[in-house]
Image 1: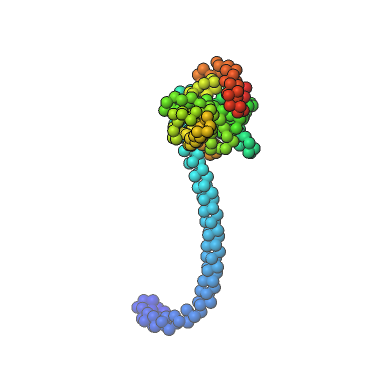
Image 2 (image 1 turned 90 degrees about the vertical axis):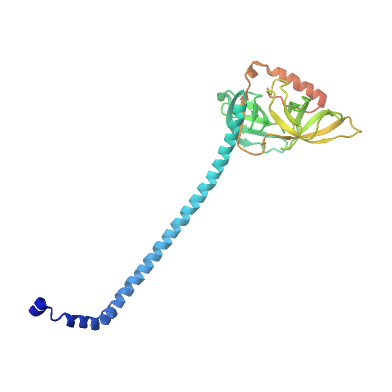
Length: 276
């Protein structure tokens, strides 16, 4: 041991012995290594399964959030359109949200989340980013009921934006159609003409889009043409509406509009909304 420590005479012998003993060492270590490999494999598999489960859960959560973000993006887009529309309107406006839609097949009404605490009043016009939707017919403290322009009990005075021709657009009960009443066959009306509110009757301020002429059917055996209108507003889509206050609207009496609708009833025998 002293000679080996000082002069390293047995180094070669130890090297030769290690070469001979190495296979025996590997053989002895096989059970231990196999046990470690098996344990590690099961541990890694369990960790991978748990990690995979967590990743799937996170993926599901992210997909759900992505769907929500898509809905929020669409809502923001609608709100931006409303904001742009409100910038074009000189009157005071307030954005409300639709809470419910009437399910009765013979009515077209909605409930919005603004009431008398926001100074909402009966007969107040409601719009979306594209045109007139209807008017408020009942006001509560925290919510209001509005009748859409397609309700069969609703009528709105309109005029052709192209030539100023005046008419009355009444609801048909169908969400995408209005009709013009008492239109002579010789009237200067063509498909595609834009209808806007005329302001007659004192209820709707003038100049707001109502719809476009979609068909004009004339019959020589009849005195009047059948004219249908496609509303400009998205009456069956979206959740936001704009309530409009005209600068002089509250100073006008509701009797002015009621007298106007009475005259229309007498001329057309069509029921017209009586909001006040």
